[in-house]
Length: 305
Image (cartoon, rainbow, N blue to C red; front, side, top):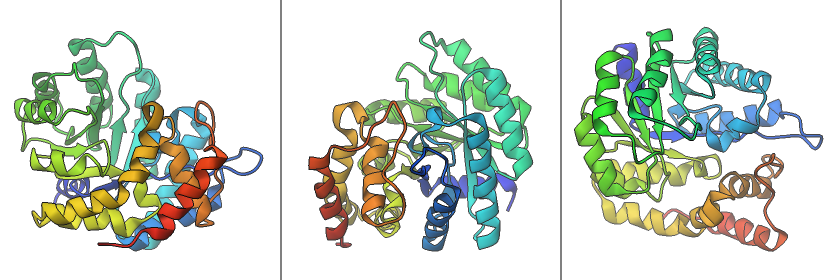
């Protein structure tokens, strides 16, 4: 199996976004991070995304982001799991290229390109941005992260034609109809399509062609995320929706106020399990005290249907 074939296989799975734990004095808690990684790897997770949005990418320093990659590579090697590492990169082109080169040097197999945060994004500009990154690391799998509904399938198809190492797309536009159209216009089989809105979007996006989905919840309950994956692979949508119903309150709390609690709720659940502190960095904030007991009760009550 070629390197890209193994990478594509890992993308067509639960793509875990590890959280970044912090100490009481707001330092990257490296030991807690390694514990969380070991837990994911032991559960059988095959794709890890250090420096994802649930990792608080934009609040981390360049040094912290690099350390996170190095630690992830080391833990995967020690576990001998064969899990693939998809490193989040972004910001200006030079920074994204440098981070991609560092990821390759550290031993990561793929990079996920965060959606450009510039307010003025054209089709040609989006294409040029991603092409510059992909061209810099031709032996590394590249996965654009698409949150902008204006990005057209034809533009993604052009990127794939120009850059063979662009092997997947993390699609996070909350519109299953738009996703189905874009995926077919870009090439349903050319790319691995990853549902980028986590478990609640996975059944509808899977039905339209996504074969993987991202997850922050997997940090808390790996077996729950893997159960949804297994149900979808078996075409058992009834079983998948039972998992969906189980986790719906948790995911809806994460999505409240335009996803203000996305990271906060995951870390609150991990704190309830004594796996890391609840601390997050601005622009996120810790969960209100009145919601903390609800999160702890959700986690305690989770049983696979």
